[in-house]
Image (cartoon, rainbow, N blue to C red; front, side, top):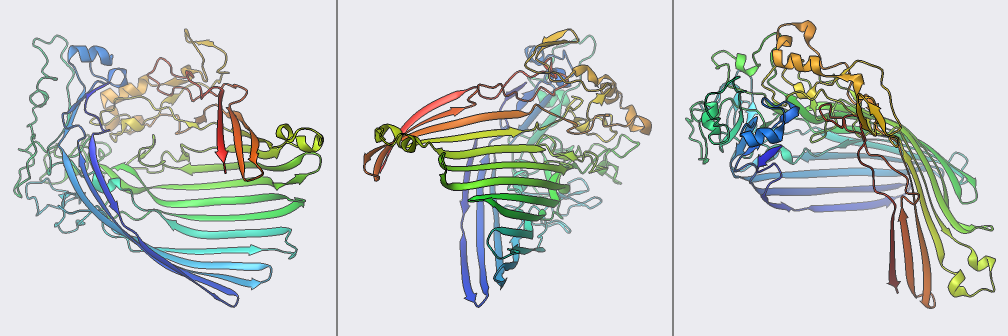
Amino acid sequence: MAVGYSVQGPTALIDNTYTWSDTISWNKGKHNFKGGFSYTPYQNNTAYDFYVNGEFAFYGTGGGSFSQNDKADFLLGLPDEYQQFGRAPSNIRTYNIAGFFQDEWKVRRNLTLTLGIRYEYSSPKRDTQGRSFSLGLGQQSTVFTGAPKGLLFPGDANAPTGSNFPDKNDWAPRFGFAWDPKGDGKMSIRGGFGVFYDILKGEDNLQFNGQAPFFGYADLFFDPLSGNPTKQSNYLTDPFGATGQPNSFPSRPPPRNLDFNAAGDLPFGGGGVYFVDPHLRTPYVYQYNLSVQREILHDTTLEVSYIGSDSHKLTGLVDANPFILGTKARLFNAQPGVPSSSFSYLDLFANVGSANYNSMAVGISKRYSDTRFLGNLAYQLSYTYGHSIDNESGFRSSTSRVPAYNWNRFRASSDFDLTHYAAISGTWELPFAKAWEQGPKVLTRGWTLYPIITYRSGVPLDVTAGLSRSRTAVGPSGVGDSSSVRANLINQMTFFEPSTSQTVGGRKGNYYFDPSAFERASLNSLQSSGAAATNAALRTYGTLGRNAFRGPDRANFDIAVTKNLYVYKESARVEIRADCFNCFNHAEFNNPSVSITSSLFGQISTTAEPRIVQVAARFIF
């Protein structure tokens, strides 16, 4: 539960994007040459008003320090955390430049090769006022001499002028071929390989906005009360006084000799402060495919494809200031001459992610044409068997963070992975006019069906231990990332049919899995005791892996029926259309609750949309 402004705004956002591009083609004999370039400058002018009046958070059973009921803590005036930021304007500038050259070479009548190369460069995002910072272990800033060692700003040696240093190595070769083995137009073998670069997230520079020392900032955590408090709590009325932190609001431009400690800007970091790795590289992916297509009947083809990709240097979050294993001291706080509380945890955008995807896709398709006895008909049957694996699924995903000392600790099925996906779709013009040639055309002509049948397997489910969201403790991992700890799996998983109510552990509900298979009490004990800091044998991220099991499958049938009424020959008509979604009103269960601290843990309490029917008409001329 939270009270106050939120991360959702309000905000004033003004973006300007300009694009200059051109492409030229030249046919010469068996070659089709093509080349081009593009230049895209971008301006972001934003005034963020996130948390400007502050927000109090009440954790309750999610790791609260008081009654374990967030609403009761609110009534008692006992928050767990307080965040506040200043109103932060940004003036971010960047540009992208790209050029390419390609040769489509018809080697033989039945063989074509495509060869190409592309170059891209995206300049690091830069705030025109120099409001950014980076990390440099052991280095002292000369721009802000009162900053703790390890915190650097534009103008410092070894510090970028924007979010990161430029990456000018983004070359992207491409290769493809198309081959008709017999030259009869009934079969084709196609394949290709290419390197593709991403553009770094627009959030990189935005994360610096509103941060100290350029603006006031607070992320305060409140201590548990004593067993018998003798005075009224001032956590709500005076959060700064209650935690002994200076009030840095209203924000003022920082002088170069700013004393970070006296200004209340220490410990630096914590919630809402994101750094960017100054040596950040552009993420890239290798994509490759091979397909065989064959005509098996008139107007009907069968295609079997292998589709794969291998992604490198994906961006995600990692704590750049973890607890040093075996101690209760963080890395940056262990620097000589740095007070032990100068830095909090430091979330860093870095190239910590990697992923790969492999799949087999099979499809049968029939082109729209007259089919004996059935009338005009087209259909597509497709099935994909694939698997996406990564160690984190991207910023803002539920698993965007990797452990500081083992980035691949949670390498598993991606959050969005679907193992099986099948679909059947078609267009069928009903042959009433042929079957009843003497019948009135206004009734027999213009009837068409559009059926769609889909099936997919369930998406991965992830059960964390639900420990305190405060990262000030070393936690069971000994690193200070308790939110990444998964639950312990203590029994074999038992799954239920969610359409039938079950009674499990004295609770009745539509269970999908047995919640008693999981345990968190021992992990919570480690979280509070801090014993994992000095005892390596106790360090754990839980025995359950990331995305270890899957939610319910889904199958669905949709259909549309249209009737065309011709008003004037073929040039004007009225189309009446009826759409039926989830036509059989089949219960499509959403994922169960995977919050181990919830009373609904393991239960499915919602479904996708029931049957929906809509009717529309339009005049076409």
